[in-house]
Length: 294
Image 1 (cartoon, rainbow, N blue to C red):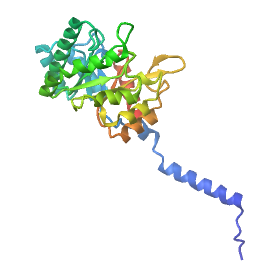
Image 2 (image 1 turned 60 degrees about the vertical axis):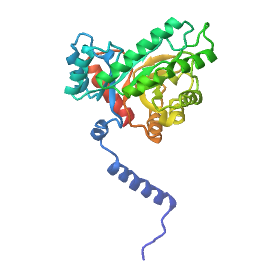
Image 3 (image 1 turned 60 degrees about the horizontal axis):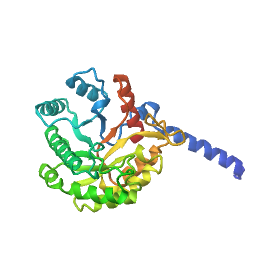
Image 4 (image 1 turned 180 degrees about the vertical axis):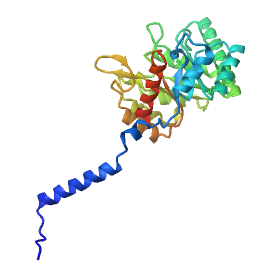
């Protein structure tokens, strides 16, 4: 009669070999992993595309490199903008957002003339978005400095932005507030509160992954902002060295960022915000986004 007593060491050894075999059978091949695609539509900023190319060739390059969308600068809302929107539609690329910014004439400025300037520029950005088919503009809402106290920036910017909501709603273009290095909205809790106080879904959050790494964790901000997020910027930052780097080369925990975006039900565009480069650069960038956000 055979001896049925199996030693613990033999059992564990056999179990380990079995598990390893199963892992080999179920693990995606290297080629399958390389072909992983981002779970979100990818976009690139217009100014990142090669400056020597024509408008049409820039759009074609973005498409050929694997990008689904382009984020536009605040161009005049004129016939040229209509041309660009038409070209994008022809090549199946969505001009999904307009980066207005807001540094030069912020809605927190103490000078009424600057406020008027800023409002006129924001109105142009809203109309431009409508023309090119974008559904939001990016707005830096306020700047805190030695002349503008935090509380003044908070209250003044909300008051001035509210006067722009009727036009935004008429055009159906969201005003997306972004957190930047402007000494303002320094925590995800405050960012959420600031957006909520407009009490209008035409004002949402544009979340920049890299901008919070110096003093926080992107996944924490994403989970706190939740459904308020309508667009996402992708950057990476080395916290210790305090320097901007390519996606995947910095301190961002992309696994947790991807997980957090899924948890809050985000499905919108993720737009790289980096330096400009040639075709090879953009193909590599699209591949990085695919690997990090698959």
